[in-house]
Amino acid sequence: MQKEVVIAKNLAVGYKSKKVARNIDFVLQQGEFCAIVGVNGIGKSTLLRTLASLQPCLEGKITINQIALKAYSFSKLAQKIALVLTEPVATKNLTVRELVALGRQPYTNWLGNLSEPDKSQIALSLKTFQLESLQSRKCFELSDGQLQRVLIAKAMAQDTSIILLDEPTTHLDLSHKVQIFKLLQKLAHEHKKTILFTTHEIDLAIQLCDKMLILNGADNPFGEPCELIEKGCFSNLFPSEMVTFDVKTGSFRVKK
Amino acid sequence: MKNYRFRFLGLLLILLAVWLLNISLGSVTIPFTATLSALFGQSVEHTSWEYIIYNYRLPKAITAILVGGGLALSGLLMQTLFRNPLAGPFVLGISSGASLGAAILLMGSTLLGGFLFSDFSLVIAASIGSFLVLLVVLLVANRIRDTMALLIIGLMFGSITSAIVSVLAYFSSAEQLQRFIFWSYGSVGHLSWNQNWMLGGIVLLGTILSILSIKSLNAFLLGENYAQSLGVNLKRSRLTIIIATGMLAGSITAFAGPIAFVGLAVPHLTRQIFNTMEHRTLVPAVFLYGAILMLFCDTIAQLPSSAKVLPINAITSLVGAPVVIWLLVRKRKMLF
Image (cartoon, rainbow over all chains, first blue to last red; front, side, top):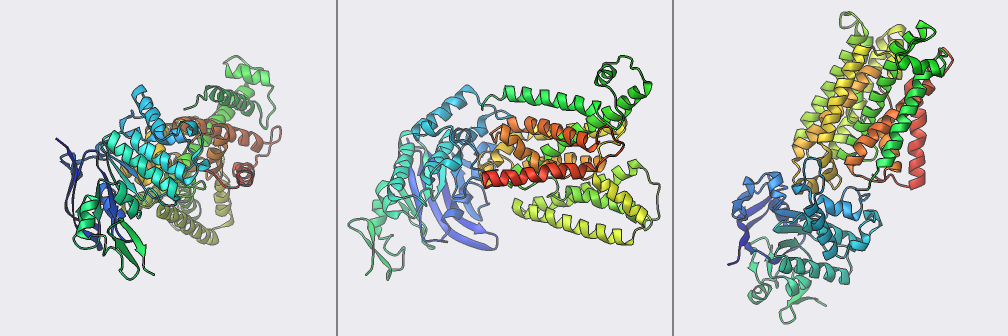
């Protein structure tokens, strides 16, 4: 039987003064790779921040591993959810290994000393993301794509059942975008992690994701990419005078 | 984590050397061998030498270690908490709070009805001043999540304080003004053994709080959102770090006057030797380096073999400011 890892019921997210998105419902199973898509400002990042407990949810209920999100302490939640944000890390003067090692904080003692299991988890993360040769480099020496891989490796080292990522492929060229997508997919399928991320790469998400959540400001459809295409959910995602969705190829075309 | 054992050993040896140098030099020339035998409790030719070493130079050297180490540590805490290479104990307004307390006591005492003035009341006034500013900063910190806003609020407190100080200065007598100016020059040389014990106790508490914060300090290096996602309780950790800074910088400024640049420059200097951001290494290293620098600056300020003493604040600025400029020019940007 598959495990329901994340359940969001009738969710409304945003700020006290302004609700950004409402009527969000979805269920994620263990090992599922799911994208959140939608136009700018529709509330993708706000939803992700709410799931990560960085801001309170306005309405509805979020359940993580059968327990309400609100019931988790910061330290317990850190063992369930790992986070990769769009904001740059505050200091890039850390080495790759030091940054990945910070992912072990939820498990280390009061001083943050690494035990042998911690070290082997770090080594595994570095190996999975092909960062072994870079591990003593400082983060300011890395390219955007390498740095993104380091942050995802940190999330993997955190050894959580869920990883949330906010636009993990911005600033990357096409090949690096595909590389990150493939790595995330592998992480979800082989390491049985539930991965939820926001993205603007709808074409890639349709090809590689198990599930997709479309934020459209109304009913916010959720399901497998093929189902969503059949239902015509992508067709009115963007203003139709600008781009149209080609159902056959599953990609967007610019209107000439 | 790299093994920095030899560098720590080196720093400890340098600290010992500078400490001996600091004690053996001063306005009265005492031979080095006599200094050593006095320290080891053996009899010395002149009893006055023994008196000078025990009651003047030794407490002064201890104060210098506490002041240098404590200020440097508080600078490190601020730089990590605000993730800003230019943060230091002055930025939060803690030092300006102490100045305000001292200014009101020294220059406004006629307005307040003039109560008994002693060295100890100066310490109390400065402590109350820094504590009040800290309290306001804490209240604001609980309401505002954004640390940059907190930084700016701290700077604004500094401006308000200096404005009040200049108004007070305008209305006070020349003698009162002189007293305040002497306090603001900073000095490590006037603390009694009892005062040293008190300062030592507070600095120890602040250092313990810093050590307890090492893990969350490391998480703060990634930014506050990442820190929370790693299990850090933001409010509690920020509070602990701010209280530790307040205890360190507040008590030191109260006892020794506002001493510039140690808090800002030492963390950067330390990272030249220990090329890491890991606080398990930096916390002890920064304390040692600060103590060394302060002992060194104090040795210069004493102008060995002359009766004059230079203001310690001038020396730390003369040493600290060029160092910051040199770091900026050489590295082009201040890596934090």
